[in-house]
Image (cartoon, rainbow, N blue to C red; front, side, top):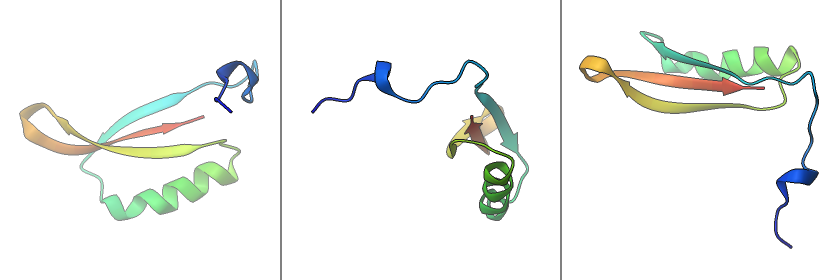
Amino acid sequence: MPFEHRTEHRDDRMLVIQANLDDMNPEYTSYITDLLFEQGANDVYWIPIIMKKAVPALCSTYW
């Protein structure tokens, strides 16, 4: 059975928040994720990225 995006959960008040975070200890991600879920986030994920001047960072996305 193929996945249909039209049938997934939607809410008119839902919004996506993204932030690129550098100079943060990656060990904090699980703690921050727990806090976001406690505040009602539906999903949280982290993507490792490289910012300008080859600075390692994380992209945090949640909704």
